[in-house]
Amino acid sequence: MPIITRKIELCIDREGITDDEYKTHWQFLRQIDDNLYLVANRISSHYFWTDEFENRMRMQMPEYYKASKDIRKLAKKKMSEEEKESFEQLKEQLERLEDVIRQKKEDFLCGTSVRTSIYRLVSEEYSNLIPTDILTNLLQKIADSYKEASQDIRKGNRTLSNYRKGMPVPFSFPKDKNPFIIRDEGENADILFKWFEKRCGICFKMCFGKDRSNNREIVKRLIADFNKNDGYKLNNSSIQLVNKNGKTKIFLLLSLTIPVQKRTLDKELVLGVDLGIKYPLYLATNGTAYIKRYIGDSDSFLNERLVFQRRYKELQRNLQCTTGGKGRGKKLQALELLRDKERNWVKTKNHVFSREVIKFALKIGAGTIHLEKLTGIGRDNDGGVCDDRKFILRNWSYFELQTMIKYKAKMEGIEVRFVSPAYTSQICCNCGERGERKEQAVFRCMNPECSEYGKEINADYNAARNIALSKDVVAD
Image (cartoon, rainbow, N blue to C red; front, side, top):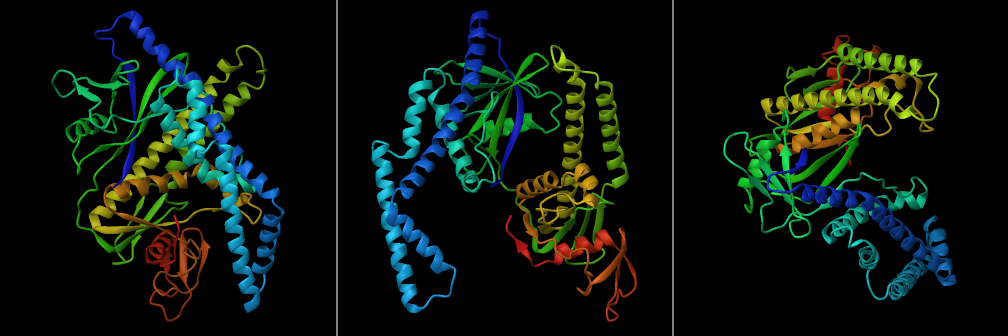
């Protein structure tokens, strides 16, 4: 079942509380905000230190070093039967030594697991400042994050995560009590959210604003479906304090599981999505050739983004005389506001484009969507961006668009697969043979035996249909 996150602004409900209680609630929130990132960095550092402790123990065992070295040597060549037997013996020896290392580590940690020892360490120091439920969820979150990144950290491809003040505060909802309350009646009645009733008892009022994402109806559905197995379900969520323009705002990052829509879709009918230059998206299927559609156009998209860039450069020129010292942040505020405005515009566009893709898939009954795996697109062998791709990658948000398509498709019960982008724009979608593309927008098949031989085919349509027909599915 798909999991979605909704960002909803909160404000402390003033009804029925005194000014002193209101101040106490804010002090509690700021106390958590001031200390949470310190705990997060401690947890992350201790996980790294524990891994390094294991590596040091391995280095101090000559038999382990020799066995692992011999295994690497044997693995690089074709082994004889005798060497295969020796290889298996070395593997068994390494497994025994790993057990010894794990036992030594456990003894060093006083007979507990790594997670338990770290929790004891941080709870002893911070449990009087941060509720234990938050500490538990924070530990789980950072453990998962470190586990995912640990291999890259060991290889030197990335550094240890550094957490800063203002990070989201993770927490879990009570299982037996609905934390949401609808006050009064009516379509726009206030919805309240109770947080840590036993510790501080903060009651938040949910502020939906213009509610373009229909968050009010989602929360109402959560309340109605509470304790139902087939309805909306609450997941561990988080609260975040955001300081902007001298004001502190509170946001609930509400995570919930929603039921998959029950639709009759044809899993064999595949919709291919080509993310291109002339059209942001071009859609075609592996079935009937005339089912196709393009979404958006490059001119309006690029023109709008170039307007943002020109305004940004103009502001930079006007601020060239700005030096460091008092007031610099305020002088640069216009640049930050413009950057945020551009980012929000791009995100909104991607929401519109991705929604249109899902609508089209549902209209034709396609149960599968193929997207290109675009890792490394536009980059040379050294990992740098090719000169002819710099402008495209600066102005197109491919990854975000694909992510939105993926999660919106999951909500509708549509499967999303990623396929290799190799040759999708270079072969004919009708015969599978190589063609020529002298112009960006036109493809010509050069196979005399093909019914499309010599004809001009829309290059984006040709690529989209090849993506739909592709069997070269790669890992997500």
